[in-house]
Image (tube, rainbow over all chains, first blue to last red; front, top):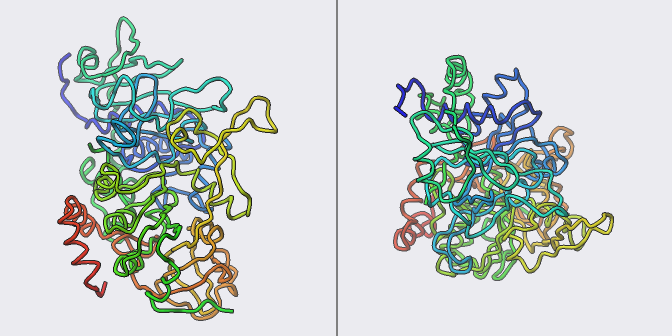
Length: 262
Length: 272
């Protein structure tokens, strides 16, 4: 597959992919350090003319919670959050995510920040979209070293939620019945490359489609309408990807997240 | 009857060695001036609970050797990368870590707020977060039919330490939308606050302000600390000092650099 001439950035493609996964829902919440999912959620809201509600947890503007940090989790427990995003230092073929450490838990080789809300939200939010830009054998592993949250649960465990997909810089996997299936490969990438860089086994159809490129209409929405809103929470990301500079009163008002590093 | 306004050091005397201390997440009004004062005083063996996550505050306290046990859901410097002293302390085994998940900490504090011994929570079953917590239990819901659910023991901190925009002379503290600060103060035996400024009059007299006010009833001591969350931000008041945090991330990457940071920004009293 030849690298098509790029009129869009990979972040724009990924945001478009995620916006389609979000679908027609009432409420999307985005946690820490997730600029691309936040872009996608705001894009979905623009396309839906104000639906879904979008809660960016680090935003003052795009966040309606008034009852403290617990309100998000109480909301989710009641089924009032339809879509959430999780990442991980490691993600395995069963959909387990690891946000804690590699090696032995008592004597870790690498320590990540911690599980955040994953050990709860993965169970109660109906559509959890896994997102990890770095698609490699160290991130996508046969078995995680620590289960912050499991991909599936036994039938007696209360679990209305769980993973529906995994988005990386190379491809989109769907998730069902405890397994990932290769759903599409992004322009400029190949199935062989995905196999080479994935540490877990996955299903794939005879012919794997290419991920559709974002339409001119989508790119216009992203660049002109979404990007300025994003700049409040992710000023560096908005500047790097969309060339948006942040008005000084807003600058630094909230913490900016960043992708996993290790 | 009113909570006494005190100097910063005096207000912090309640936070003693070995104390169970709860502090708020990185965006809620983190008492950083108070944190530096505690490090200068050399507080030891803290059991630190960060509700539900932390950034610079936990990293500083850990690096300065003030923490014996840390209970939280995550520590990182966000866009500035991993929290270096936290990471080093975990990999070297210097502190005891009680890994949690955000809603579990909220729920455990809420149990203390209500004066009940535990709180049930969904999720967790099948995770290693639960597997490594021998203080958490799974029961079959007495109201369900084969419905396993996790019980979390109440967390009743000795002290809640918060930073807020303002207090009045009656000890009432205006926290605005940061309601988790109220949960912390309700749950803890005592609450200690630093504030940006003193409000003339009684916060409870104005119904608009009263809705965002933590009553002085819960508050043991208050000190004024202008820009007391620096270099972190205070919601709707001032933002994070990104340059400083980047400098911290650079310096704290090594033990020597961290020692130099303490020397420059903590032990040497600054105007800021």
